[in-house]
Length: 332
Image (cartoon, helix red, strand yellow):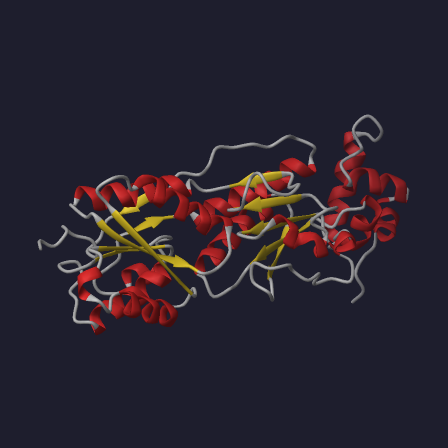
């Protein structure tokens, strides 16, 4: 069965095709009577008519499609960001295409023959602004999530209060009596991890020690890095602050291999509050990041930019979730 066209609707309703276009495009008030508009809509419904969105988009110069670029799909944080963005997009008749950059946080390749022709805008999570140049980041409306607000030419930014999250962790551990810290830092070159490191350094003052060890963003990489860092008993910290829950899971494995109890001998904290945080034993003390809210606000920002409306918003709040992996500092 062939799909009915606007001409079929016009013939069945006994009106011109121009009248059908006015009515179905909601441009009829003042030009077509309400009675005729109702008749046209009822006829279109009876025939099962659906507008050809591809043709409509071509005429209007819009695709109602946004591209969400993420560094990887292996981290559930980005899946949650997509869920939030897609929810808001659907409410406004938009679609969201998820694109994991093959080169992680590095320069992303254009997944389309022409991004400008295929997209209305780009949302990028945890990427550098100049990494989006190849897919229209310098010509398409661009919203950056969890990225340096001072870099690039993005039309809007959506960020989390990362420094405040690190403040909450640090104050929690200091209150428990910890003074010797090890920062298990991600080796990924990213503004979000740099912000966490800078905040931790600034928060630890006189009377505290801080050592930094960098690790690949994997459980095995973190385990190997921390085993080496804890090899000398006389230099051991009492608390390990990890950039991410994945690193914290690796840190827990390293501690167990060395015969250390968590948290009696060593407190370990994460960041992100992934599902992994409650899958390990003991469960991780970590910072909860509202990833879906990041996606929702990112899509909201892009819609505002597309409408020509300036968009600004404060950083999204984060909160410390205290579980069993942190406890009082061990006595000498």
